[in-house]
View 1 (tube, helix red, strand yellow):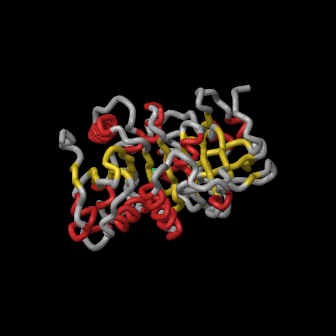
View 2 (tube, rainbow, N blue to C red):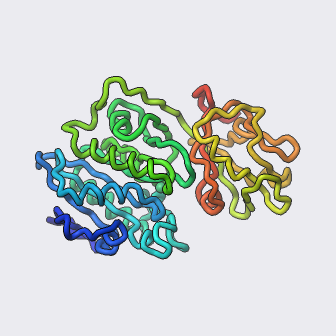
Length: 349
Ligand SMILES: [Zn+2]
């Protein structure tokens, strides 16, 4: 088979006793990015699954390891990509999202593919194109605590069916960041699954239960339960911080920080936040260090947040999610995602 890529180890149908006894041993045996190919009952069809694009998000790898130990036979061939193995094994294990000095692998699935992360992303895309799976799932954990949800580029019955294998919530976004779920553009239904916090045992169960449905079902692009109600959130925007912004988490305003958020800010995840609900503190002189644009690149900050004195408030009723209490992720990625509570789109005014 012409799957050889020097960047990705190809492993066909591993025997359960060759996988190691723990998830850490399993990753040591893989020793780097890998593609595990498990033959199905129907050899004419394939599904793909990716996980560990972020080295600090173990639920998908744990689910895959647990499943592979049972010498499974999926309904159709399963292609399992395991991404940031080096990153996850770097001490302390499952700590780094990506290694210092490297790009976030789940922002590398679009050109340029020049650095090591880009070349690995390109190798995964090339194999997907060659193997033509009927669907693709990418399993993550959120950096903060909160319920599970899916992310997709399109809202259609196929993407909803895939998401419903794992969760009851789906974000639909036109943001193009170079994430793997943008593979939907190639007409392969693809969703990201955010199982919940990396430290939350429920997230491991959500990943495992969903994986079993994904591999066992004869069809995954049709709803697996007729009564499933999917909550769909459209076009979230991201609150991004400038590189020089100082953010801290504290019960009271830190005068040395540009932004202070309470340590329990994650409790707003997926809840409704009213305009009179204070979110934290921002120094008025630091206001320009906060940036919110919609997928069209238009500045919509004034529709999402407002400052009253030093206190930060929603500018209108919102739903917030993926709120992080990790300052480095807040700065390198985003502080949170938001949608309006009435599902109206945020446009430049
Ligand atoms: Zn992730």
